[in-house]
Length: 229
Image (cartoon, rainbow, N blue to C red; front, side, top):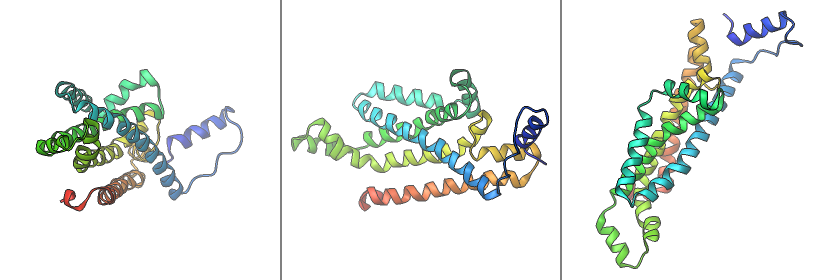
């Protein structure tokens, strides 16, 4: 009925390989908050990296049809690799811990962000582009003042999708020692403890719902009402 960490700590003390008293047991609330903070850290870093790379790259390549399609193909190809297999492939390259988890979540976040950014830019009415050019706007000004605002609803939808997918996928990070809400789920499965499983599953589901609501607020704040409809 004890977690692997508790059993290992007790064994090390009995063998004289660890000194001092055992640390005080955490309450359930402390464990949930700790795992949630780690979960948010993993997904937040990966999402910020993906947005910082995928959005500017997609904006730049939107001017060139073939490179844009190549970017879509590569990001889509990465997304076809199962999450657990991707984590396993990254272990020989970057080791265990948070690094492979963040890298895997970053790669998984690329496809929805790249696809939605390019789709939003490609779907801007050509007539509006011609009008902007006729008004004397340069390509860069047209991108920032016309195309990007019109593509913003689709772009934000891609970021929201990436965030929600990352929250679910990050539960697998516990397999590589990165922690997060997957840790109580895996421990609960090993111990056949349904309470431990729910200790990780329910907060993860609540996080996904909270992110959905957060992005709805961001969309209302950043996107004019006529574009949201």
